[in-house]
Length: 473
Image (cartoon, rainbow, N blue to C red; front, side):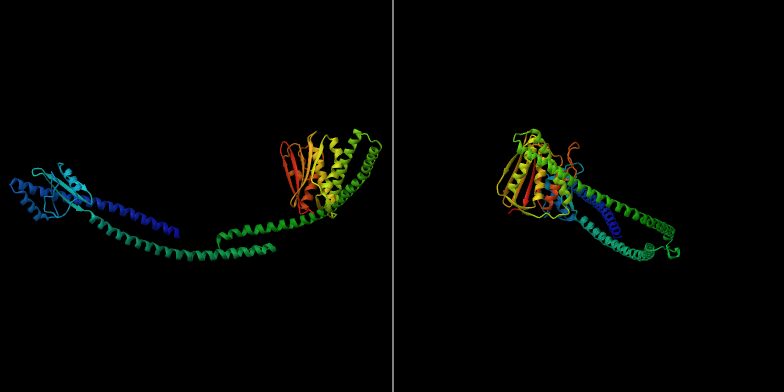
């Protein structure tokens, strides 16, 4: 409403001002035409008088005095065409440039007009070489327009007050009507709200007589049908839920039995693997002690057995990690790394790789031995597995201030996704062998112990770096 009133007032003011500007333009034009006509007639009458004096041999001085007597000293101006001097007795001073302009236009047959601060008409009397001119100021027309502008302002204020008064009256009536309609609609909506509250708790229908508005009465039939249908579906859902609960309970019991059986199978399988694996490793050691010469077949068997041993240790950790609490102890990480290198040397040699250590001595950490072994063994195992043949695997251990840096560097293919590799059963390529559990175990240990893991990989090399913080002794 306010916006409409403002726009309407703005439109009225705009139209009124446009009309006023057009009217002012017309007033100026008409006033100019009128003044031109007056000074034109005055100059021509004066010229007729001068011509009469000239023909009757009147002197120039007598002629000028007669003109001044008839029109006043500051009414008619007479200039000499040769030097531009004011030969009339007027005390009014005229700008020399304006005089020259007046003399110039006066030489036309019909004379001419010059507009400056005033409008002037000039015409020559050639026998005496005079320029006779008269001017009028235009400020009078501006005064007229100013008066008209004041009238316009008063008229616009009157219009605005009338429009605002009418708007207030309309707004008042509109507010009253809106309040009445709003009250009626709120009453109907409250009726529906109370009905829906009751219907949500129990089976109930709305009475058509409780609704007053015709449009809302049409809704009663559809609302009641909706409530009836909802309660039908609710009953069917309750029956279905009871049936599903029984099915879910039965399936849950069956699943629990399967999980227990699977768990038991894995435990027994791991246990069964341990015994023959221990026998194989023992007889390999006995053979190597008895026969000192290097046997490539025995080296291959030993490498394979150690790989199986690493996988066995991973499976054992996976089964037990959520049931055991792994206690921490002081570990000489430098020495521990050399020990694990001895274990993996045969595997690396059998796969045509070589492990090189760059390890600072006497770096100690507070960690669990089994979990530390899982981190190192899985990284060494993966390094041997994925490094290119006849390349070196660089293992470094350094301490910088309160941080221990352990890194494994290999010359291998680029890892496509350095985040996905830590997920269980993930393999970069479908043809790769293995379960994809090693790095998942490493990541779970690192997350638990707040170890930062950084993986960098390009076409030339891959780096796995582990940053131990707060574990230095």
